[in-house]
Image (cartoon, rainbow, N blue to C red):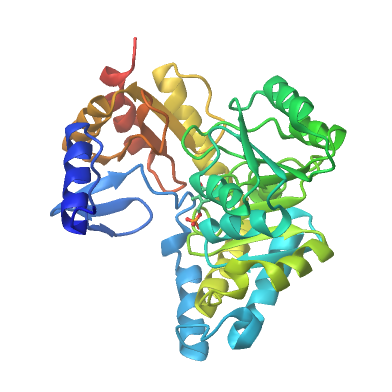
Length: 383
Ligand SMILES: *Cc1c(COP(=O)(O)O)cnc(C)c1O
């Protein structure tokens, strides 16, 4: 017999609370790229993925406002009906050129991109091999495909090789999926080796570069982080360094053509609001025009790591792993006292025992704020 739904939810909430795993929403005014207001206090945020401060850039905002005035607020239908605004084609050709790909398809969000694309190419009887730390939406796509799902140890090429050697064969199709820059750890995947293994084992490769685009590599080259790696499906989002909302997948002409006719999260979901496409186009133009902006988040992350004697940063994301959820909550509360917002990241977003502060650096962080953060974090470093 069922409990009432309310009793069920209440019991679940109490279990989470007892384990310090209950989450709650905190209304937050983002005043610009880095300052936020929460609970009546102004804090400097080190938790936003708006790495280049483009969500509040005057040119990006102006492009979005113009697009709303001209085209309205919504796409009105799926892209295959009447929702395929001409701005999408312009954005797609810009993204494809940026990634060095033949073509691109824009999506409503990164979650929808991964959840939609993986089941487009794989099904029951096929194989998806994932980095164990791959984003939740990559796992969701793999599970939706109904394929066998195997994880390899994080960034461990030897383990991937062993898993592929064990499980390839039988004529089934296989996809390896990983991230370019890992969202919660900030480290980079060894894409050259992974891509070589994929070719050796006749597997396709999907790379989600949500946290790399616009940040790693700097300036115009930022999209082409690993120019020689052969990537079949290059996924990314417009919601992080691009400062807006939406996502994309790049690939060959036929791959993208097939996605546009078959991927359920394209076919059965309304097109992106045209203003989001206009904002993304403007954001890409700002990045092209200001390479020093794209180089700044990594430089700030490196300065922070150097100040604390941490291993050198590889991206704009630096994890301070504290262990239990309690410890991450306590550290975040202490930082907030010092005027710094670093939201604690707890399981299941990260593996058990690795609760952390995930520090995300922005081009707009003043040097004094990075220094203040380093001093506030220093007492919490694990010995
Ligand atoms: C943020 C993120 C996503 C989700 O993108 P949204 O556009 O926010 O839905 C997908 N993959 C990775 C690796 C991410 O970090």
